[in-house]
Structure formats: C-alpha cells, structure tokens
Length: 128
Image (cartoon, rainbow, N blue to C red; front, top):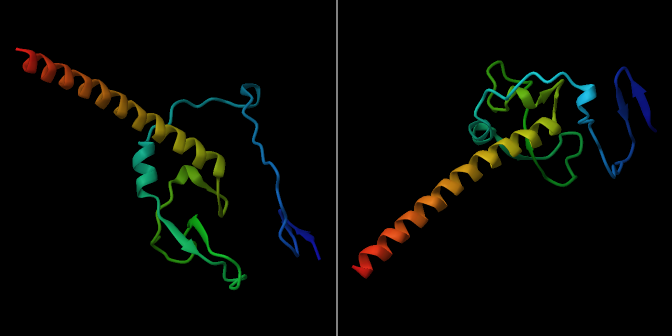
C-alpha cells in the first residue's frame, strides 16, 4: 500500500528512479557568491559509515553520511550545506565534491610543474 502524509510519500515496495534532476538554470536562482569554506576539509571531516536501516534489518548494507538526530552533541560530522530537513542534499554533496576536486587538481598541476623544474635541473647538472 502506498500513501502520502504531510510532505512524504511512503511506498510498500522499493521504487526505481531513472533520473533525478535539479534545475541549474540561472533564471531560477539568486546567486549568493562563492562557497566560503574549504570544501576539501569539509569532505575530509564528514563521517561516512556503513549502516543498515532499522526498519529493514535484512536488507543490504549502505554507505552513507549520517545526520545525528539522537545525541544532544552530534557524534557524526556532516557539513551544514549538505543537511536538508532530515536528509542529505545530494546536489550540494556533489557540488562540494566538485570544489574539492578542483582544489586537488590545482595542487597536482603545481606539483607537476615543480617536478618538471626539478627534472630539468637534474638534466642540467648531469650534462655539466
């Protein structure tokens, strides 16, 4: 039996979602600026755990971030930008990951450049 209560749909069986799309059209957004925190640090601090849902103990294990709604002092870290009314905002999680990858890519490019410089110095010393 499927039903709807207040703002949630409940299904008696698992449903398959082929695609979920959030709009990225500028015309539908108010751009607030750059993300002011260190995305890589936020990702590194995020607690990811292997879990099983209490309501489905015989179901498979899942890997997930956790919003601690049980303890007064949260035992699990999740960036506030990823929290969405008791759930995880996957759109923000993916965007945070993009920012972290961009930062790491910048570091890699600098390291490649430095390695190249050092290799050239070694070649010069060897030919002298």
